[in-house]
Length: 83
Image (tube, rainbow, N blue to C red; front, side):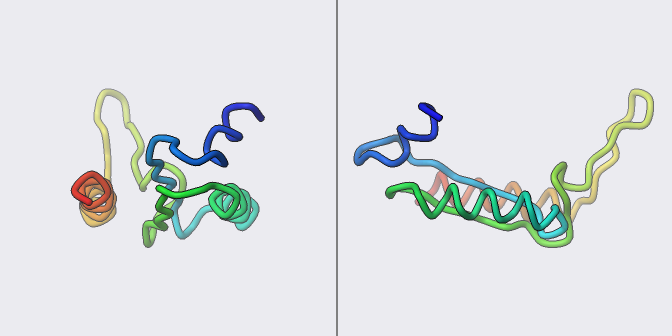
C-alpha cells in the first residue's frame, strides 16, 4: 500500500513495530516481512508471554491487565524513545 511504501524510502520518521509472542504465526510473519522491507530507522520488538492486546481485557468498567507484560511493553516503548 502507499502508506507502507513511505517506510521503504530513506528519511522517513522512525518506526517501532511490536507484536506479542503468543500471536498467530501468520500475524508474526506478516509483521516480520513488513519490517524486513523497511529502511532504517526502525525497530521490531516481540513482547513475551502475550498476544495482540498485551493480556488486557475489560470486565464491565474495569480494565484487567498483567503487570509484567504491561511493564515490559512500556519499557520497550520508553527505550525506543530514549534512543
